[in-house]
Every structure is written in C-alpha cells, then in structure tokens.
Amino acid sequence: MTIAKNVSLKPFNTFGIDAKATSYCPVSTIEELKSTLEKEHNNPLFILGGGSNMLLTKDIEALVLHINLKGITIVSETNDKVIVKAMAGENWHEFVLWCLEHNYGGIENLSLIPGNVGTAPIQNIGAYGVELKDVFVSCEAIHITNQRLKTFTKSDCEFDYRESVFKQKLKGQYIITSVNFELTKTKHKLNVDYGAIKQQLEILNVTNPTIQNISEAVIAIRQSKLPDPKEIGNSGSFFKNPIVSAKKFEKLKENFPEVPSYKISETEVKVPAGWLIEQAGFKGKRFNDYGVHNKQALVLVNYGNAKGSDIYNLALLIQKTVKRIFDISIETEVNII
Image (tube, rainbow, N blue to C red; front, side, top):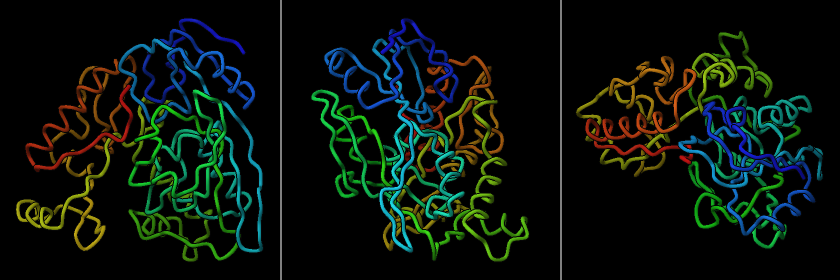
C-alpha cells in the first residue's frame, strides 16, 4: 500500500479539474482495500472510481482511495442466459465491448458511457431506453467501518431514475467491489425505439440489427453529440431529465407547443432537459474557459483550465433560468464535490 501526498486529481476526473488530494492511494485487490480501510476508516476518506460523474469544486482534504479492482468472470450460464461478474475497477465501455465480443446482450445501449463498473449501480446509469437495473442481479460491497463484504440484491439497491440506495440512505457507507449482470446469449431483446437509434441504423444500412449493430449506432450517436473527455473536459449529461405531472405538461405545451416528451405513465411525463436548456439560450454559450457544449446542451464543459466552482455556478444559473422560463426544476446528475 503506497500513500502519496498532495496529488493532483486532474488525470483522474473526466472534467479535468486540477483539484489536489491531501493523500492518494490506489488499491487493486480486496485485501489491499480491507487493509487500508482497517487502518484509515476513522480518518476522512474520499472514494474515487472512474471520476466520470463528479465535479470537483475544491481540493480534497482526505485520503483518496482509487478503486482499481480488475477482472471479468462468468458466474453461471444456461443455453439462453449468462451471469457475468465484473470487478469495480473495470472501465464500463470496455466491459460492454467484452460482452459484445462474447455475444452477450443487454447493455449494448449503454455503450460509451464514461466511468467504471463499480460506480454504475450508484447512479443506475441509463441511456437509449435501457437502465443498469434492467440487467442487474447483485453487487458486492465492503462496509467502510467494519470492512465486511455484503451482497446487495436488486431490491436492496432501491433503484430509481439515476438513483440508488448508495446515493441515499447508505451514501458514504459502502464501497462497491464487484457487480453481477444477467445477460442474454440468444433471443436478444433489442431496444431500438429510443432516440435516434433507428435513424442511425438506416444510415449504417442495417435492416436486421444485431446487438453489435445497436452498439455501433449508439457509439456513432454519442460521438456526434458528446465531446470526448480526453479532448474537452466534461462529465456527459450534467442534468437529469425532469419528470412532471401530465397536468403540468399539458399547461407547458400550451405555451410551448413544440416541447418534446416521453410518456412515463398515465400521470407522468419526462421532458428532455437538453431542450429546456437550449430554449433558455445556453446551448453553445462559452464563458472564458468553460461553457455549454455546442452540440448538446446537457453537457457542461471545461475548455482547459476552468475551476470546478466556475462550472458549478454556471449550472446554478442554468437551473435558475429554466425554472423562471418553464417553471420546471432540473436536478444535477453529476455529483458536486
């Protein structure tokens, strides 16, 4: 176990914010993690995964534990399905590609989402009509204080839209070490009705899509709309799509007839936050070294050397403006640190 002092976290967060960590320790085995927690659990800790879903607005005056647990194994399988276990430090997109290479279906719509496997359940990541909970079986997590490993089932995790028990009542208590997924080997359930997937498949001249084709379509769509964090600092979608009552949506539509929507139920409607932000005039707007991406209004970006506090203040301005114009509150999807 090696603990370094005064380490820049710029390489470890996709926003590229140059915040400093008082102490930094990468861990690559369960034994290392347990040992470190046993020694340090009474001291301030900050758990770091892929660094893709956070905005650092200050230096981290704590020991940053960087979870680098690796490995993908098959737990069990039948003729039609397979349970795959992925360790928390595996890159999410590389895990998706591994599954596609083995023709395991279920997460192809989640291609190119930044981050690591271990943080995926915390956020219940989702895209193009699929959420992590759709394929989730269980996860193992270690309790920070007593270092005991516990298995969490799907019901234990209390998944909701971009929510889980790990973001709510168990926040800061556990570190996810591995996740089990149930994927299909045959008779794949294809999700092509959300967003521009059908249109992109037509561009690719695909009439009878495979899970690999859907992944290719999703990657093409995301690359056309979203900046690569290696080139422009960002954390993907910064805001959640708000869900409003059907009654409120009808009133909204009276004033804004062109507003797009997705029906959730008979009483609820999801409104794209990107559309609201674009209509509020923020798409492509730049403030010195930070701003809103010119192709996707949901994405806030660091053009080089912005401070996290600058980007956070921009997010507050966007929220305030959207609320004033549309009377809709939009919540951040990114964790503000």
